[in-house]
Image (cartoon, rainbow, N blue to C red; front, side, top):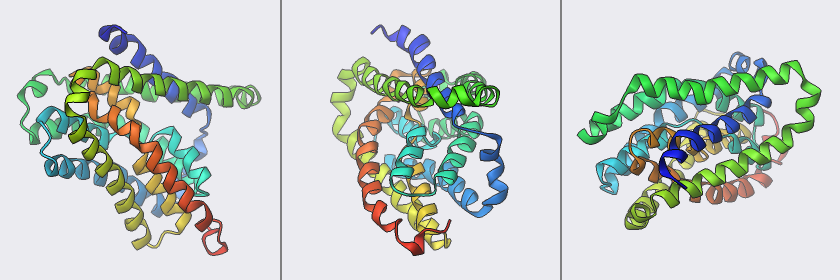
Length: 291
C-alpha cells in the first residue's frame, strides 16, 4: 500500500468508521453518567489522561528509546480508551457502563490531550526533527474531524433510527474490528524495516507500559475503594488504547512515530484478554456484583 494513500485516505477513513461505530452505541446518558458515578469516572479519567502518559514517559526513559520512538510511546499512552475495551470489560464482567462512559469522554478529550502530550513528549525528549513537523493547531483539527465528528454522527443516527441502528450495530462493529486490524497490519508493513530494527526495544517497552498501566490503574482504583467491577473497567481502559488514533496522528508527523502504537496493538488484546479471563470469575462473586 502506498504510504501517502494510507496516511491521507485509509487511516482517517478507518478511524472514522471505528469512532462512528462507537457513536452508534452511545446515548447522552453515557456522558451524563459522570454525574451519577462521579468518583469512578473521575478516578478512571485521571488514570487515563494523566497517569498513562507519564507512565509512557517513564517507560521510554527506562528502555532508553530513541527520541522519535519515545515520543510515539507517549502519544500512544495519551490516546483515549478504545472501543474494544468495552467488549473486553463485558467479557470480564466489569462495569460496562463505566467503561463506555470513559471511552466516550476520553475520546472527546483527545482533541486537547493528544496534541498536548505530543508536544510535551517532543519537548521532553528533545527531538527537533519532530518538533519542527508539529502543527498543534492542525493536529487538534485533525483529531476533532476523525473522532468527535463521526462519534457525533453515530449518536445522531442512533437517536434518529434506534431500531435500524440496533439491527446493523453488530455488523458495523465487525467492520470496525476488521478495519482496525488492517490499520495495524498496514502500519507495520509500511515501516517494516524500522519495526524489525527496533522491535526488541519497542516490544519490551510497549509490553511493559501495557502491564504497568493495567496494574497501576487497577491498584489505584482499589485503593480508592472502587469495587472489582469498576476497577476492572478502569484497568481495561488503560490496557486497550485507541491505537488507531495514535497511528493516524503519528503518520501526519513522522511514520516512525507510529511504530510503538502498532507494536502495542500486537500485545494489548493478549494481555487484556488474559486479564478478562482472570477477572471473569472474581467479578461473578456476589460481593463484587454491586457497582
